[in-house]
Image (cartoon, rainbow, N blue to C red; front, side, top):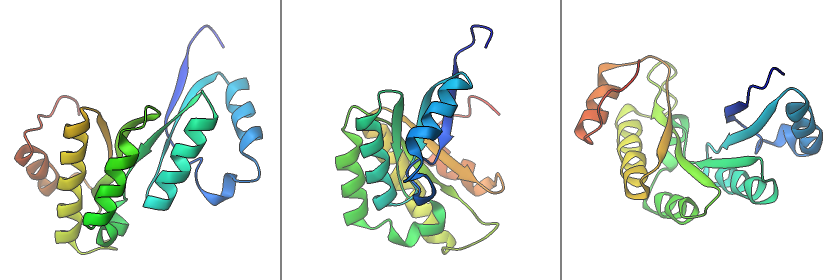
Length: 154
């Protein structure tokens, strides 16, 4: 590389496809010039695995959360579990959250509630959050504005 530092800001190293090959994946990333990887949990179980990987490998950090497809799993217990994970020093953000009204795999009202709760957790932790939106909707920005967030970038 030409002196650039590359960071993969959204990977899914916690997924089962990488369990037998993780060392080689990290070696290939390093050889390609990637100095740090942020692995993003999409369920409680994946968030726990993301944290375990981040605890084991210095070049990996974790983001913990529940994907909008699984918003019906974002109950009080799940958000409390995320809150416990979020205090670990290897956790740099809350996500993968958001609104996915394109696929609608979870009811919209549950997605909106989950998204607001993820934002609350991120604000309590004073950290970033990683969100997804299949289509950038008015509902997404309405949710963000309701939580006191301002649009800083497109």
